[in-house]
Image (cartoon, rainbow, N blue to C red):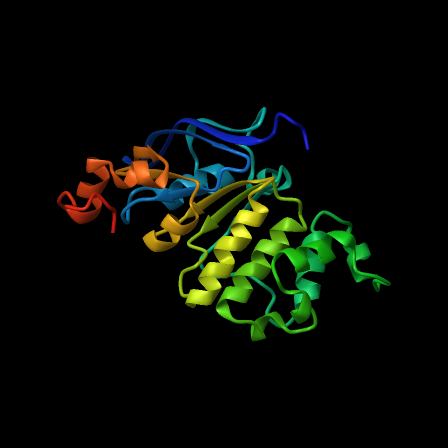
Length: 252
């Protein structure tokens, strides 16, 4: 990895659908090691902004990873540059084992015939991902037998074996148990040490527990940005989330 490719930088990003501006001039910078949470009410533009970064939504402005401009590139090329994404519903191969899922992901850029060869040993990157996401003991289980949380961890592992340098995670703890949420937060902290991680989230308790920094979107624009404490103390954020200013100065 280039030493310059350690940040995601958006400048004046705009996305329009039939005259409706879903993202309206968003600028933000996320540094490697900064676990950034992207929050905002429904319709704030969070998912559309992630769509723009990953090439799924046509946008204007500038979106750069390090010195590489992402805007206008096709989806698969953006992915190959190390931009990884998860969705609320994990997209794993449920009839295949955990190990097979990771092996397929690791071979995403290999020739088709090499995927058919029997493996004498497990690649180091796959072993490392199994350990990182806490699924080493479940390597032989079918992915469809995993819990909801474990499927999300497997999907993150599939990005890790592809050496994703930017992880864009869409509500990763939705539907999880309390223990799974805690484990997921700890996982995000581990993988975020040497990667750029953006978490789109509605769960404010999870945000307060694990976010390094927060960007609040409202009406397609950046309303507030800073630490959890700074964002929670912002009167504008309180009004957007509660319809009125909170007396205790916290976003609920």
